[in-house]
Image 1 (cartoon, rainbow, N blue to C red):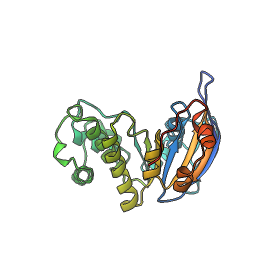
Image 2 (cartoon, rainbow, N blue to C red):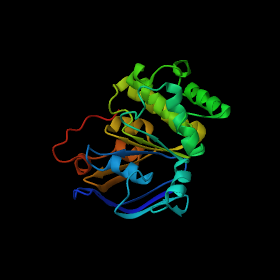
Image 3 (cartoon, rainbow, N blue to C red):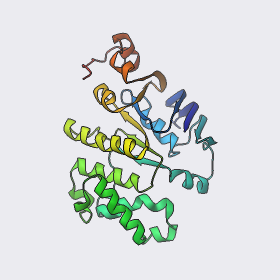
Image 4 (cartoon, rainbow, N blue to C red):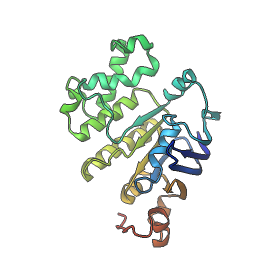
Length: 255
């Protein structure tokens, strides 16, 4: 489904964010991406959906190289790849419904989006998406009236509006407490299992990775330093842990 081949990313200031990263993702997987802040997790996800232009390497999506496609082709590809952001990325002054409907922009004539014009079918789809994440009753609330956990559910509903084949979740629970973290990851897991939507989710904590991921990759200083499944995470040695997180990292037990 997805192949990342020898991907490197160097920012204009010379910061090397990714160094020759290669891996594959099969349809229906829930891939956890682990590593400390600054390890390259967010950069990797943003390169996959072309929010960032990689310096080297290829991104192969369903057999097609999408690394250097033009904007019209990219618009079509992005219909299939939803994105959930760490800081929610909502228009705070707009209603929940308007924020969710923005997930249909890839299917809507650009002139319609300027006046928030959406079809009756799109609005019905938005209601259904909000029902999937349990906040249909908040449709007319302003986004900034919602709690952090509710705002992230709006973000998931917006991604669902694309009817995606894959969702990229960039630290979706980093600003949430443990209970809400499990709630949000539970919704992503439900979409993964019930709709067969492939999920790539960057996370800090091994206990969350162990609970929700079917496979895991680890990044450190932009390099791929770990790849394995649930069992591999559960059995990771102290030395392997330090290869991923660094010598000074303190390990907590994995539940």
